[in-house]
Length: 115
Length: 112
Image (cartoon, rainbow over all chains, first blue to last red; front, top):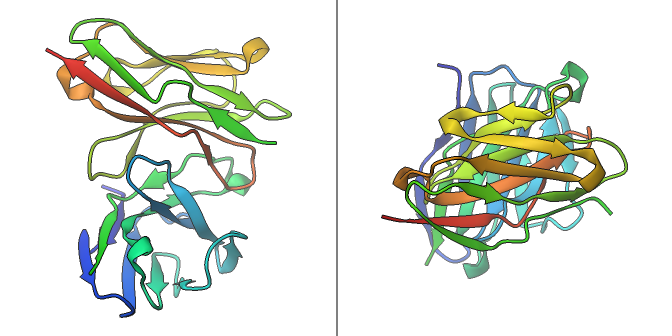
């Protein structure tokens, strides 16, 4: 089945220790998104890629970076995690408005704990 | 400003009762509308979507939603709730710029 896969599902890192979260998709979608979701809140968009075009949200801290080496994979790098970065990180994909596909398909998320 | 309002933060219903979750949006045109459901510790699953055409849309798990342009609303309904429907429900819209605008969510609890 075509899907969005996130690894790992649970990640524990130490305060200040860089961490990378991974997302892959088999949908061949143009757009890949990273969201941060804290408890009892809506997902907050950090950034998205349209193909290789990177789009950062204005309020995304510099501590968060992303890489998309190819269509299938996208990575979220947190350079120096703080306690406030503990959250669920959701990856999503969509075909993109150019295809008429506005729906976003979500992965299961990675729960990040910072100790 | 573009926004989505879900007025109810928490709703509790009895199993077998009907359900309506409210959603209002603010946007200058007709948006693409979505309802997603999220179980604890899981990602978001699409329940249904409205792009155009029939304003009453059917989704998965017995859910439906009705788009009312005059009220800028897209309320989610289910005639008979099951205990497994307990989850967080998010209304969202896309204005066509590859982004979703989410509401704050409604947490549904189901009493046996």
